[in-house]
Length: 197
Image (cartoon, rainbow, N blue to C red; front, side):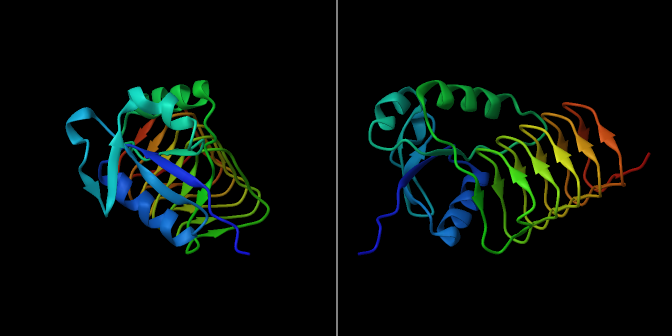
C-alpha cells in the first residue's frame, strides 16, 4: 500500500511562492494543503492552490498540518522571513528542507531546516547551508562553503570554494564570490558583482 504524502502549508503567496510550488510538486514528498497570506488575498489562488488563511490562523492549522515552508522571497531584507520563522517554530511547526530533483546536492553536505534548493542549483561536497535559506535557480555553491541562516543566494550566483557567507546576506543574480572570501552578516551583494579578497 502506497504511503500517503504529508501535507505542507506555504507561508507567503507572492512571486517566490510560485517557484516554491513548482519545486515541491517536482520533489513529490509533500501535498500542498494551501497558502497563508494577508486577509485581502483570502480565496485567491496561486498556480491552482488556494490562499486558505492568514498568519492569525497558524496555530489552528498546525493541528492538522504540522509542516510549513516560508514562501516569502528575500530581496535585500530578511526581516519578514526571520519573523515568520520565529512564529512558526514557536507554534511547533516542522520546517523541512526542500530540494528540487533537478538540483545537484552532494551527499557530503549539511543543509538545515527550512532551506529550499531550487531547480538546477549545485551544492558541492563539504558545503554547509544554514536554516531558512534560499539557494535559487542555477546558483552554484562550491566545496567547503559555509552559508549562515536566512541567506538568499540568487539566480545564477556563484559562491566559490571555502567562502563564508554571514547570516541574512543577499547575493544578487550572477554575482561571483571569489575563493575564500568572508562576507559579513546582513550584506547585500548586487547582481553581477565580482567580490574578491
